Image (cartoon, rainbow, N blue to C red; front, side):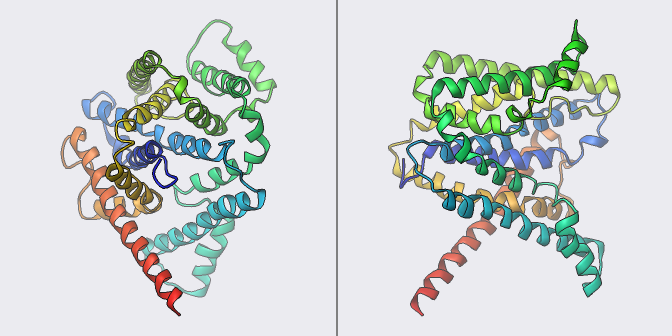
Length: 358
C-alpha cells in the first residue's frame, strides 16, 4: 500500500491499458493480411492477447469496489462512480462526434451540430472504444446488491463456477462439433443464465483473487501460469486454424468470454501481485507506478486519436514486421497520450490551486 494505493493493482492497470491500446493497434491491418501468412499469425496472436485488457480493468474495479472493509454509501457510489462514468461517456461521445465531423469536412452549422452531435448522443453508440464507460457504470450499480453475498468465499466460488460453465465453457465448446452438442444448445437457449454472464463474472473474479490472494501458494501460482500460457498458445492455434478454414480472419478466440482468455487473465492478475511483492517496500517504485497508473484513463480516452494521427503521417503496423511494429506503435501511442494526460493533470492541479487563492 502507498497512500491508500495498492501497487500491484496500479501495475495491472498499466498492463490492462497497454492491452486495450493493443486491441486497436493490432486490428489496423488484420483484415488485409493473408490468413496463411506469418504476419497474420503474429498479428492475430497480439490481437488475441489484447482482449485480456478490458477484463483486467473490470477485475481491478471489482477488487476495490467489493472490498468488505470499505464502507461505501449508496449516494457516494451512485454519484462518484456510476454518474461519473455516464457523464464521461456522454462528454467524450460528443467530443468524438465533433472529431468525426472534422474528419468528414463538415461545416459547423446549427443543423449539422444538431444532427451529428446532439441527436447522436441519444441515437448512436459512442466511438468504438467508449462502450466500456457505461458498462463499468452499470457494474458499479450492482455493488450494493452483491457485496455482502460475495464476501463469503463459498458464495464467491459458487458464482464463479456457474459463470465459468455457462458464460465460458459451453460458449467455447459451441464453436466445435461434439456428441449431444445440440441438446446443450437447446438447454441454454431455453434457460436464461445471463445474470451469471457478461463482465460481472470478471468483476467478482477480481475481488476473489484480490481478497484471497494469500491462499494462492507458489505451486498453485506456477500451475496457473502454465495454464495461462498454454491456453494462450492454444487460443492462437485454434484461431489460426479457424481463419484458414474460413479463408478470412476468425475471431472466435479473440474475446474474454472463452476458456483460454479466463486462464490468461487470471494468470496476469496473479502474476502482477507476485511481481509487485518484491517492490512493495520501495516507495520510489510505488510512486512511479501510481503516477503512471493515474494516466491510464487519459490514455484510454485519447488513444484512438493518437492511432489516427500516427496513421496519417504513415506510421502504422505496416512499417516493418508486426513482431516489432505493433508493440512499437503501442508504446508510442501510450507515451503520447500519457504525456497529454500528465500535462492535463498538471493544468487541472494548477487551476485548482489558483482558484483556492481567490
